[in-house]
Image 1: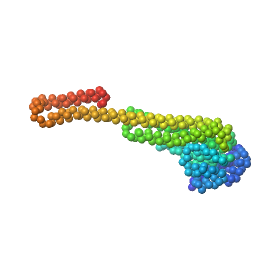
Image 2: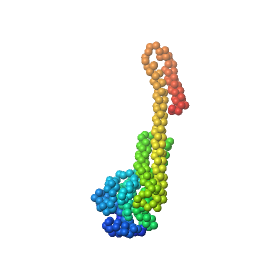
Image 3: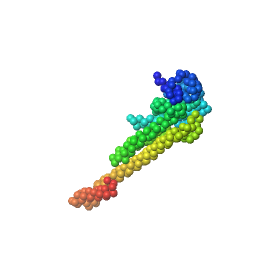
Image 4: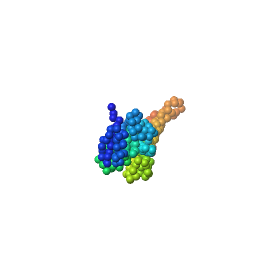
Length: 330
C-alpha cells in the first residue's frame, strides 16, 4: 500500500526533529518555540486521507478541493490562514522523447508547510535533503521551503528545455537533409514535437505572475527579505519561457519549411510526369494519325514512309527531351 504521508518533520532552528506524532501537538510546539515549523509531505491523498490534515491546519475548503482534484494551472492564492501555491513540475522521458507534467501544491501558513504531490515530476525528496544540509536557509521557516521548491522546479524547466533543444536540432537536420524522407511521417513528428512544447508551455507561462508577486509584492506568510531570492527564480523562469517560445517558433518554421519542401517536390514530380507524358504523346499522335486507314495518304505507298516516320518520332522525342532537360523538368 502506498504511503500517503511521504515525510513529516518538525524543524527547530534549521535542524530536523521528528517532534510529536500528532499534528496538532507538533504545530502547537512549533508556534510556541517561535523558531520552528512543521513540514508535512503527502502524495495523492484521497479526501478522507486529507480531511485530518485539513482540520488540523485550518486549510481553506476551496484550496483543499484544488489540491485533491489536481489538474490546476500554476497559481498563487491568498487565504485568511494560509497561502496556496500550485506548481507544475515537468519530467523529460529520454526513451520516448516526451514531456510529462505533474502537480505540486504547497500550503504555507503560520509555522507550517503542507505539500501535496500528484504524478512523478516533483523533486521534493531531493529538495528536502538539500534544505536539511543548509540549516541557515531553513531558519527562514516556511518561506525557505517555498523558495527551494520553486527554485528546483524552475531550474528543471531549463534542463528540460535544453533536452528539447537537442531533440529539435536532430529533427531539423532530418527535415533539411538533401535526402530527407518524403511522406507524412516527418510532418507528424514535427506536430507531435509541437504538442510536447505546448504541454511544457502550459507549465511555465502561467507561473510568471505568481513569481512576480513573490518577487516584488507583499505576500502574506512570505518574508519580505526573501524577495531577492524569488527574483532570481523569476529570472530563471523568464529564461525558461524564452526557451519555450523559441522552440515553438522554430518548430513552426520547420513545419512551414517542410511543407514548402513537399510542395516543391510535388511540383518537380508534376513537371517530370508532364514532360514524360508530352514525349509519349508525340509518337502516340503520329501513330494515331497513320492508324486511321485513310485511302489517300501518300506516305503509305512510299517505301521510305515507315522509316521516315520512325525517324521523325525519335527526333521529336529527342528534341522535347533536350528542351525539358534544359529547363530543369527532367
